[in-house]
Image (cartoon, rainbow, N blue to C red; front, side, top):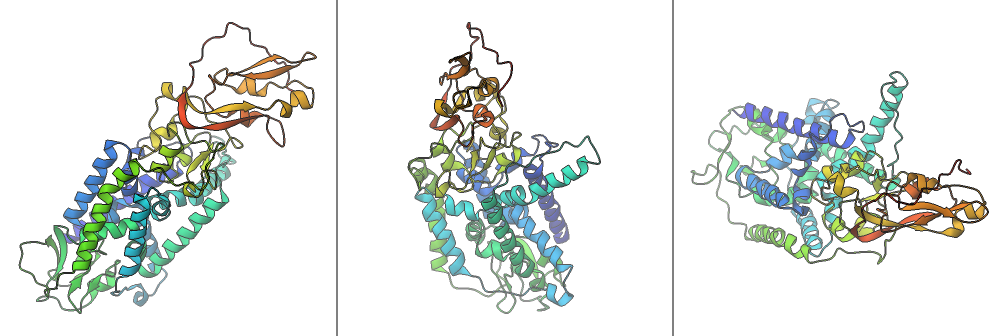
Length: 506
């Protein structure tokens, strides 16, 4: 039975891992949207979710942990599975002696200090520390920033051999995000190769919180001191390093229910996964840890009220104005976006036009790595609503195509003195040609030249005009963000004849 549990867990964890990985590196849109719903079944997106669905998923994950232990960490969390893969791969290059682990004392001071700081900052209105340490978001950033470019490079290499494979220009590269993802990758893989699930049990706030819950789960692993041969086989295979044979104890706050120990047990009876209450105890009695119980109750209470407090607490800002920082359509505005975005970069990876990229300082310090529209690289496609269908926690509310084409995320501003029609006295009209809502039309200027004229009530802030504007070094037309997204006036057929420009002057 235990071998079946272990193999089932491994298969399920690999299936979830591969499907989630596809969501972040499927740059050729081969999988469609069939796997996007899986992103919702992650702890932090459910915690930050603005809809009822997020609360239901969060409740499910909490109940699952209280029933069976840290199933989320061993099966659903992609970074947890990534650590297991790294550990298994590292063992291939080690001698049999070095592959074995041993019991390690828990780093309670470090793990609960990190968890406490995360909860305090979260309740006060800042998700920055949580997002920096969130395992799901870190997995998404590593996949998008490190593996994504490798996938595109490989595809572009193959496109020379197989012309049916389209060539792709990777526009979402951000050095700061890549460096951050690289640091996290090196840290996680290094700890995993040497110490198993040390990152989960000492640094990850989600692992620390679920560890407190799993200490009181209904079904737990138990040791039988009467039949145990003290062979240490279970200890050597325990990736959580949480089995203390000398004291015949298991630290359930660190156990991730991998079932390596149950399959390794030589007697097959000394370590069991069973209902933990109402049975005769086979391990030495322990005095009640009052401090840990109080910490457990305090953590649960903090998470229970955090969502309510954050609903009325504005996010922290490093700057009072971010007029050029444009949030994705469906994000409602900067406040809503900062409150709910996990910076997992699922929308960045899924954006067909690659106009989304990770922010550096555009949103302030508390918006580091959150997606921002960059009109220097591309523009938002008129009828595209991909980002709103991918977002796992309603940081970007789902918009139909009809709703999206009327969502005004910003407004274009025209600087006459920068326009090449004025500076170089030549025809242009590029902005007019690329405006999908006819918010720009060409009017007579002088000497047979035409100049753009804006109707901001029609403008949706898609950035097509800014992206195509040939003026340098400063573009003549730029989009500034709406603090709160608005609804643009529907496009109507203009009675006035549109001016056609035969040839651009650039």
